[in-house]
Structures are given as C-alpha cells and as structure tokens.
Length: 271
Ligand SMILES: C[S@@+](CC[C@H](N)C(=O)[O-])C[C@H]1O[C@@H](n2cnc3c(N)ncnc32)[C@H](O)[C@@H]1O
Image 1 (cartoon, rainbow, N blue to C red):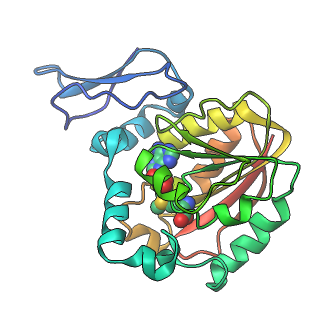
Image 2: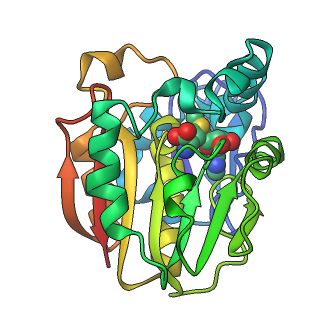
C-alpha cells in the first residue's frame, strides 16, 4: 500500500511500533518520482483510515518528533536542574496544582473525583511525576503507563502502593493489560503532545482494554485557542478532530469540555 505525500524526507524513518507491534511505516526517498517520498505501509492500521490529505498533514515534517522526541526527558532534566521538583514537592506541580489552580481544580472535581472508586481498575497514560496519580490511587489496580523509564523512575520515588503496576510501553500500546478489564482510563498533559496518528493508535488500544460502560478522560491540544496555537509542542489538533477520531474508533462521547482550559480541552467517552 503506497501513499504519495509530498516531500521533505530523505531516508527510511521507522515509526514507533504503531499498534501492538504489528504496524510499521516506512518512508522512501524516490528521486525522480515526481514527489520526493512515499509512505509504504506494511499493513493497514486504524490511523490511516482518515485519508491521504490528513496523512500528509500529519506526517510531513513530523516523523522525527513522532519517532522519539526528547521533549519529556528535557522537561524532567530542566526541572531537576532548576530545583523545581524540590521546590514544588512533585515533578509536574510547577505546571499547576490541581488542588489550587482554579481551572485544574475544576478538572479534578468534574473529571477525576466522580470517576475514582476502590473497586475500579484504572489506567493512567503518561503519569509524569504523579500530579494526577495522587487522586487515582484509591482503586483496585492502577496501571501507570509511560514510554520513558526515566519518568517511571521519577514517579516511583513518591508512589509505591501495592495496587500500582508500572508499565513501560513502546509509545502507543498498553502491554500486559488484558482485553475488557479496565474501568477508567485517564490522561492529562500527555495526549496534548501527540500527533493524531499516535492518538488514534492509543484509542484502538483503549478500545481493546476498556470494559463496556468504562470511562475514558483525555486532555487534548486545541489549536483553535490562541494559547494552544502558540504552543510549539502541541500538534495540529482541535475539538472536532478529536471527537471524530473518538467516534471513528467506536466510542460514544459522554461530554466534551472546551471552555475550561485556555490551550486544550477534555473529552470523556465510553464504549
Ligand atoms: C508533560 S508530562 C505530563 C505528566 C502528568 N500527566 C502531569 O500532568 O503532570 C507527559 C508524560 O507523558 C509521558 N509520555 C510521553 N510520550 C508518551 C507516550 N508516547 N506514551 C506514554 N507516555 C508518554 C512522558 O514521559 C511524561 O510522563
């Protein structure tokens, strides 16, 4: 399966294992082919349902970031160098404390507290230092999924409850979490940095693990808001696009909050 996408790439660039390790995307330089490169899909995966134009928009110039950005490792290193972790008590609180900053308090009270329950199996994707993990701990099992071992190590400095399972993943999968076993998936500050194909791959995995009636709460980047548009690490994402992806993956949207945060939105959905 070959898609022509324009130019800008000069070497084969593997994507992260896209979907449970089954999908791979390669770019081929094709001198004289009319356009400079082609995408060759080893197999069709859900992220490519969305058409050639959007594939081009998502992939052009973005492959390097999608493959292995150092953004999150840089953020952690800088926070350590600047003494922010000691000053704030937990890595991530320098971005705002959900116990204090009014918009985050509202997120906590509307999208976290009402969904947390001691009987639930919960997954947090991209927990960072545990800014939101604090609220999710009272549950049966809490899977803490992160792509970077350095971030999981930082998290484990403060969190060691026996119901916690630390999972290092490949960047789009939920390994070791069985099908239809999860009641709640939560992610904040993480999907705001993902290109849409990465989000789409995660949605397929969430669809696999979520119990019928389970809840998913994700914060996403909103480039229609001025602050979102000015944030360089945010991908081209907005409420309509995220809603379409969520629906296309077979979920039912419960609510979508687009006024609370100045650079992003929150979507809650179920199956
Ligand atoms: C900006 S931090 C946010 C941390 C925390 N949720 C918070 O709000 O304070 C992003 C987190 O996502 C993790 N992360 C980045 N890319 C990821 C990926 N593809 N899959 C899972 N976690 C990822 C980072 O390592 C980091 O822990």
